[in-house]
Image 1 (cartoon, one colour):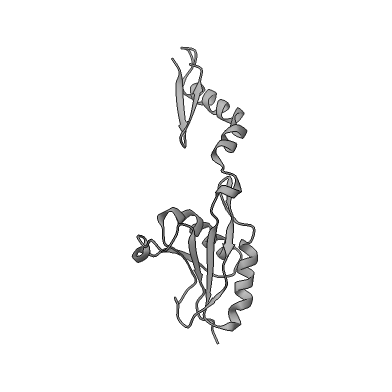
Image 2 (cartoon, rainbow, N blue to C red):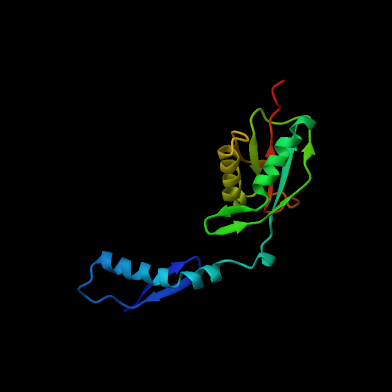
Length: 161
């Protein structure tokens, strides 16, 4: 008998454990097999960067005085967003100066597929002390065909005078 472990669509087969093996030993055998083949699995799971669409990041500021802060955010994200073992590249779009926005910094995303990326961006901004940031799923636009997966917006609040 063979035991199979399915990893994100890939099938790994391990030789059947000897009858005397415990469930814990069996699990270790499977994990050892996965570890040995880790390089092959990683290569199979990661698309070449030319085939991965980068996240488009739009930074919204309320006043020209926030351009330095927007620049800090751009610098922080320019190398991409790490999600586990994969780094998603980013396309930093021109800073948008708007006269309205939230009372606290937000990372807004519009497609469920972008939740992890938005969470990681919010965490990085908070950790860097740039802004206490929360992620915010914009439900009203989830079905909008003109907003692609990967569209993420960072909204900065009005600065205190």
